[in-house]
Image 1: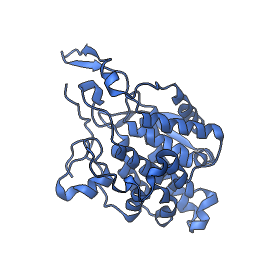
Image 2: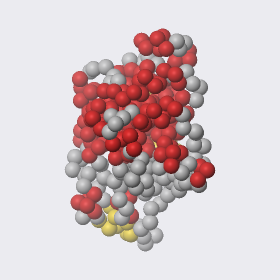
Image 3: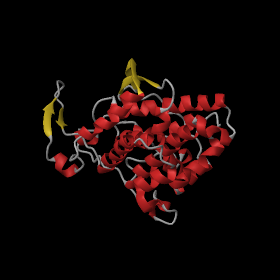
Image 4: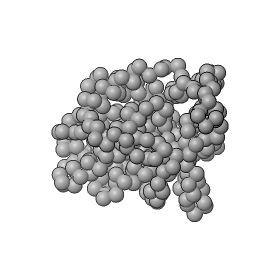
Length: 305
């Protein structure tokens, strides 16, 4: 059975790479020092949302249903970490306790945080409140948000998320009036402890295929959800962080926690886009850097640049 593509509206035009994003990919630990110069940008939330969209948005039938390979290369998780950290740390740095040192007026800071929250809340919805088989990057990014700005979110007065149940095939929300609070989000993240911890081995999952015939005669395979080790690990970090009650992690701390020593500029991640199969991961960073819209490259959903 072939993959079924999602019928999404036209993608947001891919923005040009800026020096902040390029530098963040070169060394994720420096994100906190890179963000201040763009915190007041009127396009901050929109640009950061566009960069991460492919990594948190399911765009085809989950691969195991049609015999595909759901694994993602290391660059996928590195890029997801970078983009999620940019969003989370921007929100945290715009907190009332921090914004004054950057010369940002309260009105501007609150508007920015409101827009960043919209970006994060949609990713939380995709990760936790839209059924099984989300794009694995949505859960990964959601956990990074908890690590990098969970304390800032918890201290935001009257923080509220709106809507649940994002539907992949039409790119729309099916329960727009559903409301949720920080406590709802916190409890949902803590409940990820109940996710299966042994469904990361693709070959073993393939052995558990259960063929099922649809009303139109097509046969598909009901398979357990693929939950990679990388996602299980970062969710565990997020739960531990919530239980500890400690403050938000800096970009250096979250890079060390999730990547270890490998994030050093002299380490292998300096050339993380080289020599990998980008079937799943031509995100907006390596898409622009490698073949770009002028080169006629394709994004994950097959859309031409």
